[in-house]
Length: 248
Image 1: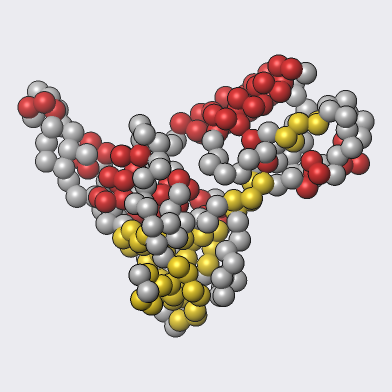
Image 2: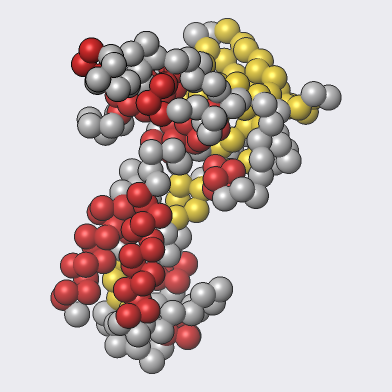
């Protein structure tokens, strides 16, 4: 997601630390409870999975998960409806509209102080890669509950990219259409239809706890998204892992 590239460095750092410390890392391996029987302690950090949309037509091939979109398994078309306007929905809308041809400094109106007074210049309009409509069930303003230090920037990006924001939507169905799919929803008592190429679902996530629930160990720990799926927070997850490791 644009603006969150530093997380790649976090992954690089921890991957290298695992190598340096000689940790036995086994990828593409499902750990069944029986496989863990010989360990004194077990820390389960199995994360989350996207919540499935409970809506007629949600099984349409053009209704896709945000995880599949961000992983590149699905490339959405020009017109996209994003269901769910929490932190993930806002990030995905930003990602969908981001155009790499845009220059960061030009879009935000930042210039050379030696040429432009105060280093400010006229902002260049952002080039939106797609037409995005961001919808949520809540009637509150979209982006109201984002982080205090970064929320304003996310809201500004959505505005710059021309993202259409709809609050208080009650989803009715997703219907097939020769040119894509139609998202049907009601708003203020009126029925609406939105024709798009894809519907991206960002309606929250569920904790993955099947491994933890099957454990019989005296000492087992549940951390990260597997512990609490709501309001995913990398800082909280890393802190939980650090505290558990320090206590072992």
